[in-house]
Image (cartoon, rainbow, N blue to C red; front, top):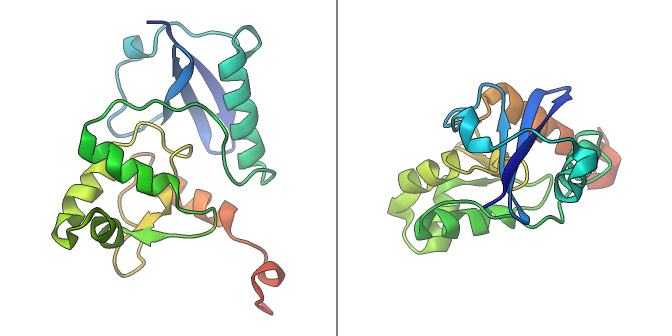
Length: 170
């Protein structure tokens, strides 16, 4: 298995993007909850020497600059079947939208699984690429985010459409 990573500086701080073979397998902030050990990332490479990481960084930078609203990358996250079911739903949340843990649990078929959904969302190793920042509490409040609530708030603010584009006057 060919695991490698690259670290970039962004206005949100350092972000590490990890690739395994021909897929992106991780995206982590510097003080990310559940951040794997540095050894798990493999060697650091230059984006110029790795076409997959180069494309991931290009798309991520375009997103962070407001020039991109979704990603077109091969993604491969490690997780169990339930986590993958949750992440598949999270992938479909459109940029600028949010949903709740309870709604995701309902889509899975059992509203009582909201807490387990929250655990799966928190374990997402592909934050931003699989937009778990778009999942909020039942009241609409910002709840836990493995990258930190400050980053969650910044990402949601980045995705807000200007008032004129959503039919609002203000």
